[in-house]
Image 1 (cartoon, rainbow, N blue to C red):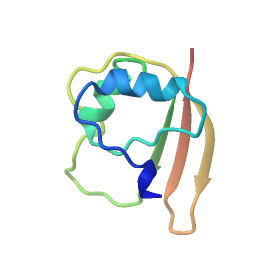
Image 2 (image 1 turned 30 degrees about the vertical axis):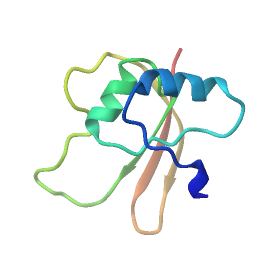
Image 3 (image 1 turned 135 degrees about the vertical axis):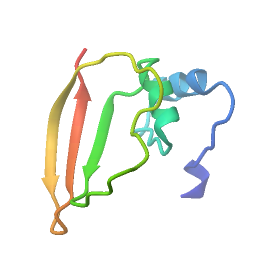
Amino acid sequence: MKENIVFLTENIPGTVRQLKEQAGKDIWLVGGGQAITFLLNRDLIDELQLCYFPVILGKGVPLFSGKLKMSNWKLSENTVLHSGILKATYQKNL
């Protein structure tokens, strides 16, 4: 499984575009608000999976960082887990 893991530090938009053009499975982005904002602003994210936890923190790390371009999303699926976590999947409206 580790052979399918790639850490990107340079030419991220170009590499993501190349990966999206290839046949195969989805790309799973694991990163913070800066990475998400960076790729959203370049229209390189097609699906968002957000998990809502039944915990009030008071403070936390923002999901998005910096100036974010407006985009429209449609809820395509939602699942409530036994723990009370809500997983919502959104598809980008074109």
